[in-house]
Length: 367
Image 1 (cartoon, rainbow, N blue to C red):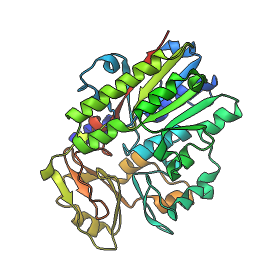
Image 2 (image 1 turned 90 degrees about the horizontal axis):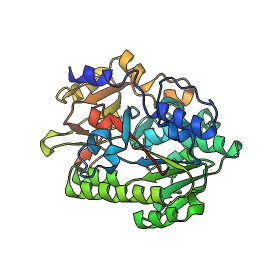
Image 3 (image 1 turned 90 degrees about the vertical axis):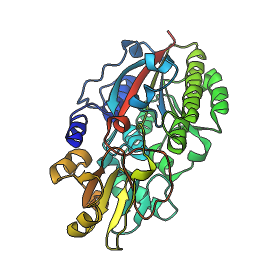
Image 4 (image 1 turned 30 degrees about the vertical axis):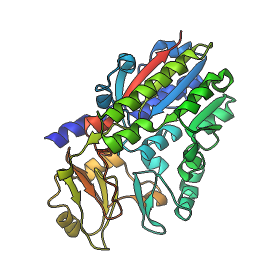
């Protein structure tokens, strides 16, 4: 079936966590992170003085194949999987903590805290619920930035200005030296200043391709324009340095376009909670009621073994508070709307199709 073939494409295959382990072992010149899957990066990375890690939000491998220009496509060495779910906050937490989502406690776009905060938008936290990020079960965990700092490795973290002081940024970029940029124009100016990138490691988060895919759809004129602008930025980045520089570009997920007739608005009572992502849906509540709510939704519930493989097992009290009773995967081409979500977009992610899950590993060097 469609579901099983997609599941086989994920389980036991290399993903963003494996890529992060490999990259940060090279950056720190250690074997600090245990590598479970082999990731074969270009050997030039070992000679590079500066290593850049660019995260192009939403630029999945299958999406990239549609791009008009060949510059990025020709440099795409191979692909890995995103996290489960294929969602921005889950992927970014995994990369920055070099840990599975269960260890970062960022399990989806929306979380539900059974004990205290209820429904939480885990991308845009509010004043009250962001205190969850100070919970003792996760407070002591170190980010990659903590490790770089303790090893005396210089680094910069370039972020869009509106994200710099967000709760999620404070959590996942703890101990990093953040540089804010207003737009791509300012970002291009910043990377022209050689002192900014004159580090062992630089991380650049780039959001615009994802935004255009959500609003206008993958393959739209607006999307092609944004991919082109990003490609020019990467060319500039590569041409601006005299030091030996290696740049790795990947994404947190790809997107899939959903037609208007395949949008399903869910109706349910207060004793059922629907959260997570719109294509990998978490549900808390009585099984009979939950099955009734989803009976006409194309897709299927994960059994306990599949759920354990994809989400993991809760190992501490915080994760038991956040762990879903049920997980439903929506079929390709469909999307569900829980009561708290209204925004009608074109492109979506969060599911396990190749379009959403596969992300490129693009390698570019200036030497």
